[in-house]
Amino acid sequence: MVYSFRDGKNHLSHSSHLTIYTSLLTEKKLIQDCQNGIKQSQYLLVKRYSGMLLSVCRRYARDEAMAKDVLQETLIRIFQNIGRYEHTGSFEAWMRRIAVRRSLQWLEKSCFQHELQPVEAPGNQYADPEIYAQMGAEEIMGLLRELPKGFRTVFNLNVVEGYTHKEIAALLGITEATSRSQLLRARKLLQKLLIQQKKMVV
Image (cartoon, rainbow, N blue to C red):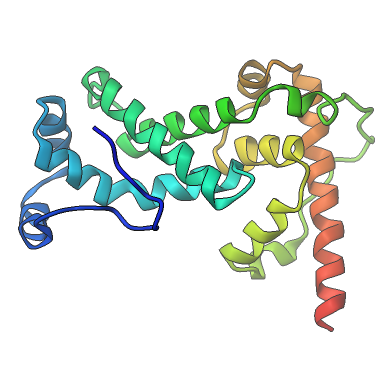
């Protein structure tokens, strides 16, 4: 099954029928139908969750085209593995993990080697500026896109997705110390970018 997102829309036929069908389906029933290969439910799953999954892919991708390519592969992988989902834990979290892993596979490890170098962390723990709470999601996303790939990836994995440094180290093939140092440096750079942005506004 292939889905196209090149124009930013889901190509779904019989949309009116899907609207009715959507209102009648619980998440559990939708998953069960997808596990049984029911096409209408598979299209519905794409319609219901592609926006959330695309937002995950965008945080790691270098541009919109790459994000949509990763989303395409994520959806394929979801349908390939949905039979293994056992209804334990959050279904959205299960799909998000697939999206994260596909995103990381698109970011070749070579692109991290010059960025993911361990540095000595300062004695005091770095704190995120309180002003982050005053920013919108798009504004924060814009700042994250300005970070080097390595910084952005570690920041997303830890702060946004909730992965531990041990898990990040395993995913990226780095040490836990490197993961911690990259997160610290990412936060520092984010604060610097934020200060510069606020000065430009003033």
